[in-house]
Image (cartoon, rainbow, N blue to C red; front, side, top):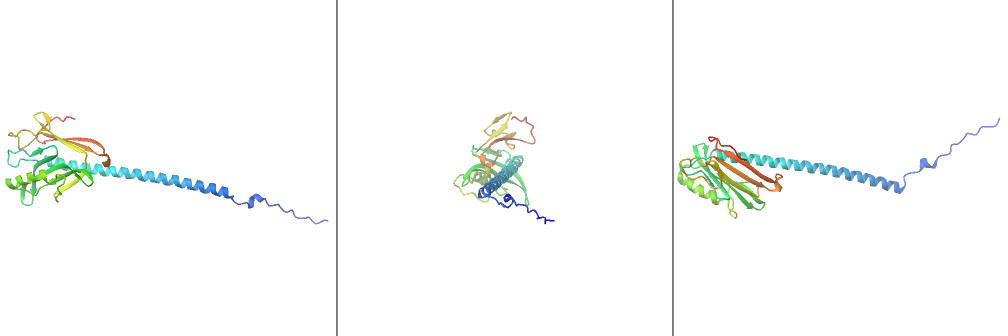
Length: 226
């Protein structure tokens, strides 16, 4: 009986063949493209989150500043019972307000203005020390108009608030809005029934546009006008 010779399977050359150079280059190119697309997606997401965070921060700053503006107006008072506590010259808004200190009640002069510095035009707020005499008030009232002028180094009582392009103030008195302060009458201790604030915010704040806020004297009911 003849010996049966085992059949040897012929190996396929395809099984032992590796990737060609072209295939490797194609694969590497595809991986690089996927990595680039992934990086761009992550970068876009990070930029979006950063923009949202910056806008949220700007909103918080604006809300805080406007709350201080309202608080200043709520506490406005005449220094002597006949002098109006509010003054607007088209650039700087000054007011006299009552405050409480460890030594008892006192007056304080506050000034808001648009001032340019190395970062551009910004809204600033200045406040005096507590005042207890009319002479001290007169000095502080004059200082409030001068301390935030362009080119004058701000003192420690001045605080930069937020970038601002322009702003304006109007008064509500006797049923009408006007940029002129109410005439000094028996109601001068109050100054005005309402104050309208208009702010023009630049694009750098993330809140570009015009914001209008009306303040109404708490003891006087006035219909708001938009």
